[in-house]
Image 1 (cartoon, rainbow, N blue to C red):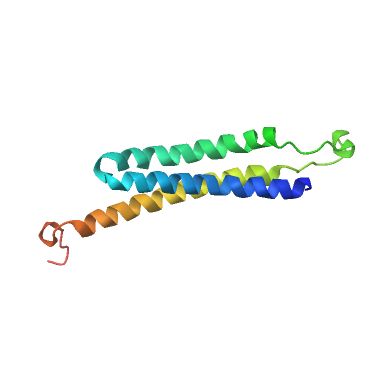
Image 2: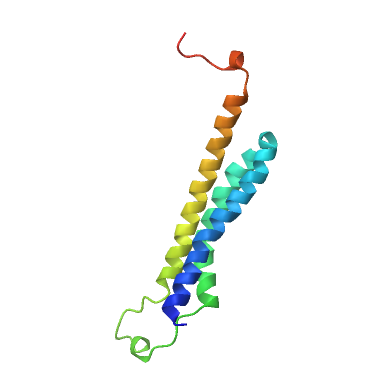
Length: 124
């Protein structure tokens, strides 16, 4: 397997990890939304930003680009490994979007579960 394939696989995993993790955490938080969801609303985007910032560099340490004499001599711009970094950044952004969607779903669910008399009626 060449490095391009490894790079695409690692980037794919880096995109999916925050989505799956935040979806699982959000589902767990929806069980007791009154207590857990404010923490989730704060910690999930923060964790996603940290993931986007740190995961790309860590993945490059684990899967470094192969040595190339041409690029090592300073004769060209070596962009191998950038897909891994972009995958981590895209995963962090997707984690933020996932947390916002889960919080919005919870707010809509809470609004619809309230009795009709307790809902504000702006039409009257």
